[in-house]
Image (cartoon, rainbow, N blue to C red; front, side):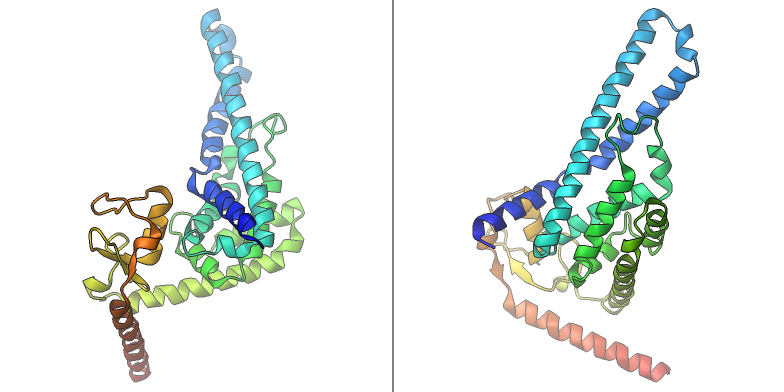
Length: 293
């Protein structure tokens, strides 16, 4: 894959991952549209003054138009991501992007198969270009395409907003109903990998709970694995943290000086100390477990 194509893929993924999930807009518009439709169908509008009735009809039409637009954009975004993930999964699993991609997929899937799915039950789905079954299938295909990558599975499990062990079980139940049974086996394999990594990361959090402050990223308060020093503020952060920050803000977060990724300086001495500390903590944990047994 040449450099131009790679740049195009990265740009597409960044545009899809950076913005507010379209499903947020759709959910808002769907709720308003459904509420206004119910009131209209109840006959209540017939008793309203003509001007107020006309205003409500105008509002319903406007919200319906927004819902249709947002849904088309969300659907096309997901379909674009599905195609890209099949041919360039490495882009989605890059440390800078993977958490955003995983949390976006989790959020979409949770809203479409979880308890919030009732919010999307509106009449005239074809009028709004809304096909939730097709969207669920596309999202599950992305999980399957990316599910062999351990970094992606770890990012799925790290998403505290939308992920839970029940997420994929809910998705499987929906797949059965919408004719997506062929995906269930592969999705179960992904779910198992995600659950295993979630357990491992929970264990690691307990092992590393008492990490020295100098080992922690000052923005995320997580253990740094690849510390780098920012040239202007001289602050040390994890490479992934500052890379994500620079996607949307090309400045040092500590003093607002202009900053690009090629200016950060690897802190190899601190990185080695952290590596040795991790090994030591894991050995101590293993010894404690052996003694308890």
